[in-house]
Length: 233
Ligand code: G3P
Ligand code: MG
Image (cartoon, rainbow, N blue to C red):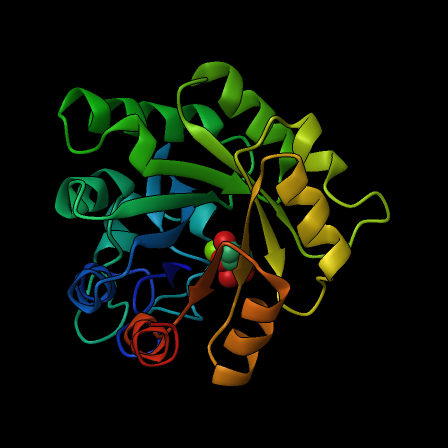
């Protein structure tokens, strides 16, 4: 089972911060999932389009200045990191799933990924770009065909994994509450990996195991790794 640290080790550290990413790596996570918003054309690592949920700031991210966003406290004195800074810091120590949250940002994200490849912070096969915005995934894939894409869905589609196949995705990223064995089997038969968010509790981990998924996104990577060590020898 592939363990993605969801927003880093966000169950024990402020989400989407360098501290959460370091703790995920320390826990031995296979990969880190993080969310990207845009401010002044700079990709930054933040889940919400608004600042107030996870920082001590106020307002819409896209209407803020970079200077303001970078002056904020995202928890435990942690700053909101830029994507570039984050990729330079993680630097290939685990895989990274970059989730595009903001509209019209595929090109800006592609630029940062190119920089990470040029600086040898990552190999292409260590990165996945995902989004609920499938139009942007298509656009991203045309810009960087060597980087894998992950098709996110929050629903259980009637035609199973067809949308992900049409997107030529590497993986299908689905919601723990809207998944069934038919979707998992169909996706895997098409060669897609199936990764499920957000799986924190043992009951959900065992359910995902019984569905045969390939990986989970969890806020508690250490707990999940411990569970698999103890139960899957
Ligand atoms: O990428 C998986 C998951 O993070 C998608 O939902 O809202 O947690 O970004 P959300
Ligand atoms: Mg996310």
